[in-house]
Image (cartoon, rainbow, N blue to C red; front, top):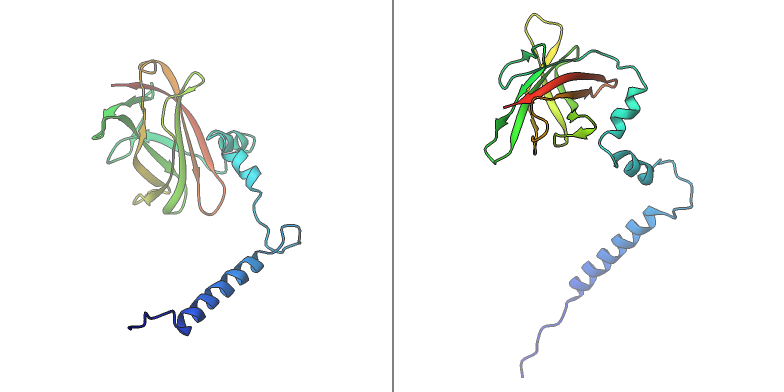
Amino acid sequence: MKRIPTQTSGSHTALAVCCATMLLALAACGDASSPSNDAAPDMDAASEMDASSDTSMDMQEMIEPTFELTVGTGQNAFEPLDAEGELVLERGPQGLQHVYVSLRAPLAEGFHTIDLSITVGDRVISAPTRVNAPFLSVPGEDFVEMVGQLVVVPEPNGALGVPGTLRAQVEPSGGGFGLVDREVQVRW
């Protein structure tokens, strides 16, 4: 009669090492009531802060911006907005429509977090746009530009040709922020 191989002592050793590692990992987490030098963020407070995409912007309205932003449009090059702040909707390849937003700021070249929204009255008509975007230097100028950021407008009905507000905020990696509210009109 042939014997069926059973687990070897090597498998038992691997299992024991795995269990010991898990126990050490759990022990390292410690008791929630014990003091710690590692200050963990208050997740309830963080979730309350993120509950509304406007919350961080609203809180920063109480503080003066640390630098000025210039808002424009343009897909491949910065184009200043005209007097009416006209933003032209373009159809995207996946069936939605968007406008292009470009920004200028007196910052160092690099990636900076931007927040963009378009409102008409008290209704936000744009999809949330919060990205880490590249700002590139402009030869001979003392500012950097971010050109051609798409801001999706999922349902433009009721927003076309009426006054609205484009809000742009930039948070550089080194701290501070710039904020601008610009009156705009969205059209085809």
